[in-house]
Image 1 (tube, rainbow, N blue to C red):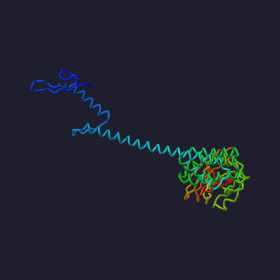
Image 2: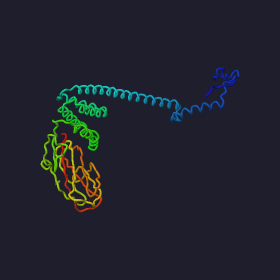
Image 3: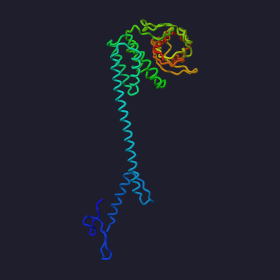
Length: 348
C-alpha cells in the first residue's frame, strides 16, 4: 500500500489539517486510497486465519494479541520439549559411557564371581533400557569370545546362565506372552543353536530332560539326567498311538517354569498312500481349548511322512502343552510311533 498523495497532502505525503476560517482544505482522501487500506487489512486477517468480533471497537487489536499469545505459548512448549530431548540425550550418552566401561571390565575378567555376574546383569539391563541394538552387540561379543577361546568352559557356562536369567526375569516380565515368544525366536533361540550348543564345554549341564521312546542325539556328551515324562509330568501320550477322525492331542503338564527344548518325531507303522498332506500343530491347552503356537505342514512322500518338530518354548509353569495332527483327506485309523522329549535349558 502506498502513502497518500495529491495537492492537498504535505510534501512528505502525510495528511494536512484545513483551517476553515481562512478557507483552506484538509487532505482529500479518495475512495481508491481507502479501498487499498481495506484490502491490506483484509489480507492480513485472512492470511493469519483470525476471527474478528464485529461488535468490539478493538476487534483487530484483540485478534492480533490472541495470535501473538498463541505463538508465544507454542514457542515456550517447543523450548520445554527441546530441553527434555537434551536431557534424554545426556542420559543416553552417560548410559553409553557406562556400557563401554562394563564391556571393558568384562573383557578383563579371568574368573567369573558373584560380583561379576551382578555387573553382567546390570550391563544387560543398561543396554536393554536405552538401546536394544546393544543386546545384539553383547551377543556378538559373547560369540567372539567363544570362537576365539578367550574364556574357559566353566566361565562360558556362567555367562550363558547369567544371560538366560536376565532374559527370563527382566525381559519376560515386561512383555506379553506372544511378544516374549517372538523375542525367544529372534534372539534367545539363535544364540542357543548357533553358539551355545556348538561349543565344547564339559561342565555344561542340562537342567533336566524328559523323554518318551528316545534320547535326543545332540545330548549324548552332556551330563544329563534323563527320566520318563510320566515320572514328573502327567501325560496321556503313548509311544504307539492310534489317531482317529483326523485329530489327536497328546498333552503334557509342565509343572516347573523355564525354557524347554521340545522334540517331536513321528514314525508311522504302515504306509498311508491314501493320505494327503499332514498338518502338525504345537500349542497350549487351557480349559480344554487348544491354542496353536506353531503350525507346520508335511507332504506325503510315497506313503510316508518326515515329520520332525523342534521348538524352544518358554513356560511360566503349571501349563499344559500338546500336539495336534490332522489331514485334508478323511481316514479312520493311523498308527504312529511318536518320539517326544522335553529338555529344560534354563530355570525361571
